Amino acid sequence: MKTLLLPMIFLVPLAAPERSIAGDMTRELDEVARIATVMVDGDTCQRIVTPRALQYLFKQDPRDPWAAGDNYEVNDEAFISVKKVLIRLARLAPFPCDVNLWMPIAGHPDKVRVVIRNVNEMSQFWPWGALYQDMIPQMKQVLETGHRITVTEKPGWASVLAPVYNRLWDIAGVVEAASEKRLDAHENVK
Image (cartoon, rainbow, N blue to C red; front, side, top):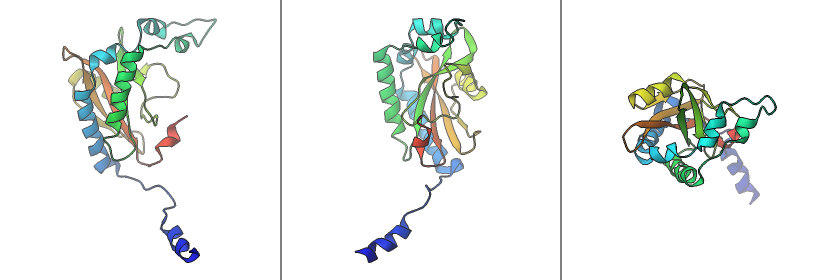
């Protein structure tokens, strides 16, 4: 028995294999993002964050600097419905990936917020703990043109950004299909 185990030990890789960012990975992410454009309901996405949470988003209370974050609330039905679709979309890829939902903020055309992050918390763009942030140029381009864009600016990462449409065929948001070159996706989970 021991003689069989020893050779098998040498067959186990010491490090997780890396995938090609330029090749198969981006093609798979592009396909996931393309399908997401059809499957994610923009009207439901627009109902996720409550008006009260949006009202507090930019309020600064000198007595409570965390007031905006404490008032983040969602409409459960809309949130869960979209999150389930995003999780299922991520499972279309043959490697760990996340499909996240980014929404522009009404009245603040240069700002965006991640409304749903997913299982592995993978994203090239989200700084941990941020309620909102400046819109990156590629997201702005997707919102303006409706074209999918592949982004590989962060070393070892690939994301494909795709539009989400509402019933009037207006672009309501952006999905990010994201993955890392390394296979250890759980490293990002905080």
